[in-house]
Length: 282
Image 1: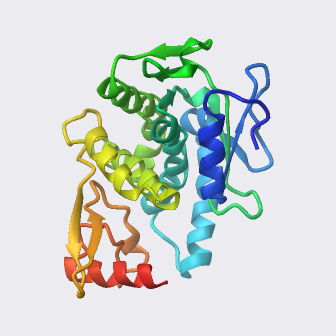
Image 2: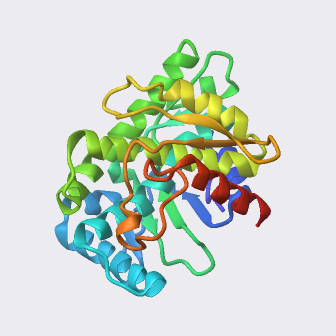
Image 3: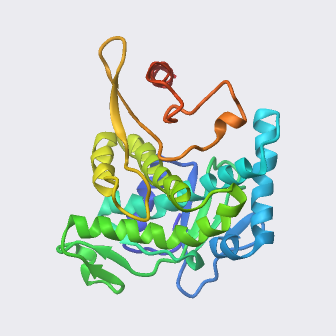
């Protein structure tokens, strides 16, 4: 649980209650971010090759454990980026979606521990700085609040905050992944969309999240590559099955060639329907 309350605390509390695989701690401004004992500071992942090596070594071992085979180094790096970026994007998109507040987190303000027992994703420690909000928000008078005029301006704050945080992370991971430019920002687009889409389903607000994400990422918002990409498929009984087309490839097929992700452009619609129905029945 957070050690101190902020304008973001309620959103993070709701997020972790709905998705207990992720824990978020808000650190006071005077407290150092945790490091060591499984913790990695985002700034170190961005600037210290040895820290990135240690971080990716966990992915290498996890792929071997989970799938019984080693992955190529670029695939390992892609999995590692996903495991960091998915929860990191939620630090910004969850309070935007739940409270209409958008924090700024430079890489110097986030630490991540993916080894915490009982947490499928891990735990993140953040040091809040300023945040954007709309007129009429009760938090608008608080220190650090920046009032923006309307919803589109707030969406621009979301895009800007995530780009500020991910840009140095992508620059560090990119050479390991043998990707750059548009391919990296396509991965960022996918992490934003699929993270919020997943947790919004847990909130019971999947359809609202899809609408919000389509407005957030309509497809022409640099540096991001691609749109939210949602579309509807129809099941055998006429049921509506929402899906999307990823802007990037996670390379999972290189580890398990007989399988692809349900949102992968390589997955045909008939296979998507089968996979979606199996998930619904599970």
